[in-house]
Image (cartoon, rainbow, N blue to C red):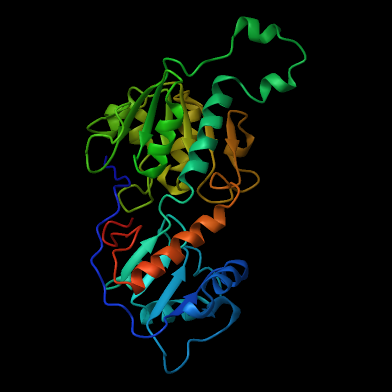
Length: 335
């Protein structure tokens, strides 16, 4: 049973300042492409690949590809990959790069929007934890308080929160849980001590699973984390756990989760992401009242898309100045 989790951004090496204005090939929805064109002005020429625009035969400057893991889902996949092959630098507006053929990125500088939505995701996660302990929305819909006299509401005080991954999301969450009286454990691939004194890094995933009341998935999807929470993992999980997934659906084996719910190992699941996504209308998880499914919106907060664009524009300036870039991705590790 293995585990990988976000680590600090890699240190990028300086690059030579481009002699001419770069070409930014975007493979993002038109809304983003228009915003980027407006922000960059004369600094760069923006080509909207998804709108059918083609890179010029004779490139006036270096190419930057601006993509997301979902850029290849339509008929423009061939054009998007062609733009990536001409790019020296590929930036993912999203935090994750899963779902993109990473072998096509070899030999290129790759960055992502790591950290841009971490605060929003952490805030929603705190809400999900409180909803589980305070039995929301059950208490809103109750006609009498009698059931809650026999089975009182829970509390986060004294609960053990287990974090799979301790990157920017885990760190933002730990800051927000400070003061609730929780015990915070984390597992990360590097095994490094936590950057925050309130968090204890444990050696292995089973060490984490056996102690956790609320289990939060906040790691990237990589070959090592693909279906990490499977039957083997749930077999060593503390019974009664509340599972929260705000990362990627495929980190949790969906069939294994159904079986863990049936066995009482998982007694509540709050899923911002699922595998597949969305789940079929007749899926067992949709019929289980203990499961709350969100439409992949934990990242949502005022100014969310702008933060991603801000990071890219800042990186473009750094790239033109030959400075190290933020959010560098280790293509071999997959995050």
